[in-house]
Length: 304
Image (cartoon, rainbow, N blue to C red; front, side):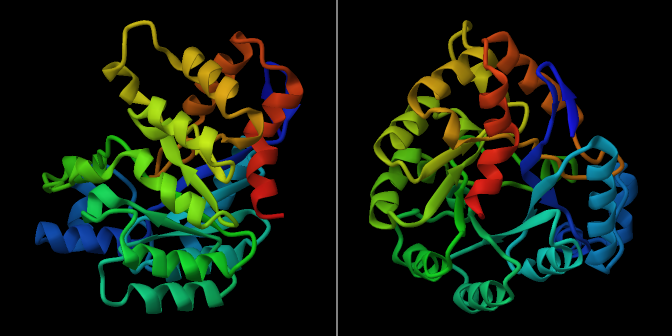
């Protein structure tokens, strides 16, 4: 439970990156250095090779802040085993998500194995990052596997994509924004009507399109995560309060999922995001019942 403007409420975080040892090993390989060379470059604490230790660290963070549950995202393709280990270690605290690249030859086999573990509840698609259309047949093959598993979600990143750790290491980010429009997900969400989809960051600069998508597809939810710095591309009057107002008006309170986009240590869980978002919700007059839905219940109900 966390103290909020409405009193003490349960909180579940829909968006936490699980930056495992394998994640950093992938960056180190791209950078052409040993993994331990990344720590002084980033001024971050690098995790041990055993993902269970990182899982323990995140569980401790949740305990310290009073957070009940969190969705952990394996943030590089092929790293499903890390979140599987984390969920196996703390099944009552974590939901397991894994990034997939549908264009990779091993994608189907990796997803089949991950879903068979019972510890992966979500697949994360980053079309702009891996340069494919969400309407690609290779995506559909993975969604078919996911749809066969009740209480699963497809997380689809749309809009502006900026990976801070890549910038900090001087690594190029050759993303392609032509694959980033939420409207591209419309036909897919209609086809897979029994599957739940989540679009993070309110569409990350495509708020209008994300709201249109949600209005037309009742199986699509939005997560509220990160600082939502994409608002600087909008008209000057748009702030987080207005974003929440528009989302509540179009999408309703049952399909908004609170998230922080937390990722690295020693910062850990980004409580500043929670404080900013809860303050914005309170200032627009959201009552305790709606706050509880957004901050906790909606995420839990996805998997119940």
